[in-house]
Image (cartoon, rainbow, N blue to C red; front, side, top):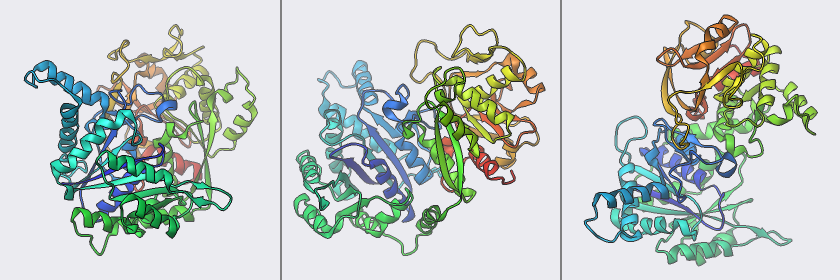
Length: 548
């Protein structure tokens, strides 16, 4: 088993996850089977209870694991399906060690960070690295590990020590350390400064890890003088100093790394052959170049409550991008804060928001929690329904469309979700009976569930290739009120897909509309660059006037 360990220095947000994913693309192109591990040094058990403002989106896996958004990057770039075990947190590690101590597994020894916590981390990595992630059932050849946070953080210290020990556990010839750092530009002449990287490498080496490759983030390509200086002061060869400068689109990053011989450097260190022909990388380059060539735009209005932070909707954005690529359009997202559409509370940006909505080719209402901005989302669904504008509602977006339909088509005054109004006289959306009302973490309906189609033909089923059922990932506590389904469907809003009991509504489609679709599940989590999510693809096809 080969391991590539990606660490970061100077500051967070440099792109360790994209760097790790891109190196994974190169390894996969060379014929290696891949898996990946993300280490998050926070005390939370998982990302499930974290605010999108604090941490970005919560990415949901097939097994219901609520994890860091970087695992979404791994799945999309490497086309793998990971599990909750692929995300290690301080909370999980300490919980395991304490449970073992309570059972008496340590035979009376004093339980300490070294060796017990560090051993637990190493055993976890080694165990997960040998689990197939590509559906083949075969043991992976390599595992890409990303350590979240920044070297020097107090909370990451046990993981750094564990990784230091790990190289000797599995053999130094089987571990390649990649350190991502920042090269800022200062002064009137724009001099590239190497001192921050020198300091972070010095700190990492002081902790016992010597980087094999430096990936240096900068706005422009590294100058030869900068590379030479970094090589001299950071104990790496000049060819191991890699420029991670700004590129035209995300898919160009693996190509840029390959052009700088990163794959050759990793292969020399880990001892595997790089084939002369790599069709996967050729396809990747063709896709990256196609993104750059697209000129004709398609405008999608994204109506949400976290629009100030795009990471809150990262998988939704990616699913839209994948779909836009499939219909040969350049994606333009009009971000609309849903509170600005609220007809009862006219904000300063009310008119601007409505102008954006009216000018969009399609409207998307993504998932979310809480009452803020709900009336604006309902207004957006009403506009899409009554003006034949393509609409996709995801999770809450399906519930919003149902509420709007109940109010304005069925005449159920003040219809609402019990999430927003516990005493509504017409509950269109209700709390799911099996869900805990006292514990928030990991208690929702989570992970991949089957959704059988209940109609012979409809737009959404055609998009899924006429499948009998779909397997998609869920994350919700509320559902359409089963008592209203019959009357809603009689009026033309049909739930064409329900769960295996036939009671829980999963997919809706409005009869006689170009594209008015909602899914209770989150299809964005399974979208891939070369295999876009069918509901998103349908939205983009309808938005550009293509037949579904």
